[in-house]
Length: 170
Image (cartoon, rainbow, N blue to C red; front, side, top):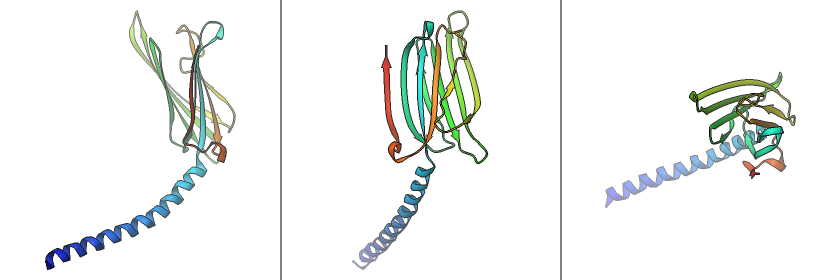
């Protein structure tokens, strides 16, 4: 009986000290999350597939909140092409930049599966749209993909983790 009482007492003391530690860490965690929210940016991505005569065949829009230095991605899957793009905003004292990384898998009936990759560092101004063409600006694939990225500072109006996601098919 005495041994059970001692074990229960030790368990109670350990449990009580863990709760005190958890309460202290929540305060620090709350401050850290608040600081990250203040640094966060909103990345708006508008991806479009343009057919002949630049008619919009397909459109997808995303708006995501990100911490500078962490990538925001989009993946587009077609019948013979897969495009994966990641956009990483970096906020610096001497000029902000957006690193755009595109990966393309293309099934060519004559050559088989082909892989292309590109990476670009683009000067970034908040609110200014940036055009990114993962397949290049030429029409070598029969259609072109245009991705428009706009990075803005996180404000009270757009502080949700993912504000919206919309897909349109024509």
